Length: 180
Image 1: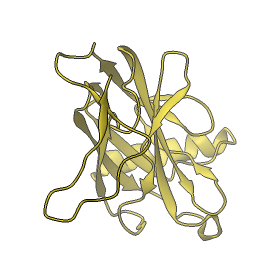
Image 2: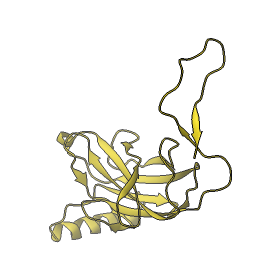
Image 3: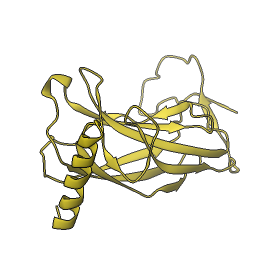
Image 4: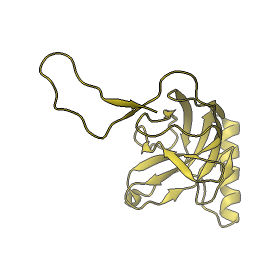
């Protein structure tokens, strides 16, 4: 960690302690802060973690939760995953989250969405505070990016049917779908 960033981290921790708030366990930088997510595209969200404090081992292993929220704040997709490596105070960690519209669910309506994220223990569900250049939505969940879902493009759109025939012998496979 650069000396200036370390000094800032210490100052933030001291200020948080003076206010009675728990100190952040990590600094987090998220790029990009704006995405366009058409169906069925995939976009990457890059997370740069700088762990600054140890985690409560009784809380379990750290899990990164990533929520895609609609304009009313409702969660419409999740991309939760284990923290990408062992939590080591002072050791930078990079992570890539692939944000997409699942082919197993109906496409999202066009519009603006937000990505929020945070960190919790898989045993206790305890969420840890983070130092992020983003709005805290409460309960240590931070709005880190905006997502624009454009209107659907031209071309066939498919969904899986409820039932299909047994597999046929040979090298080809059935893929049964319905067009929307």
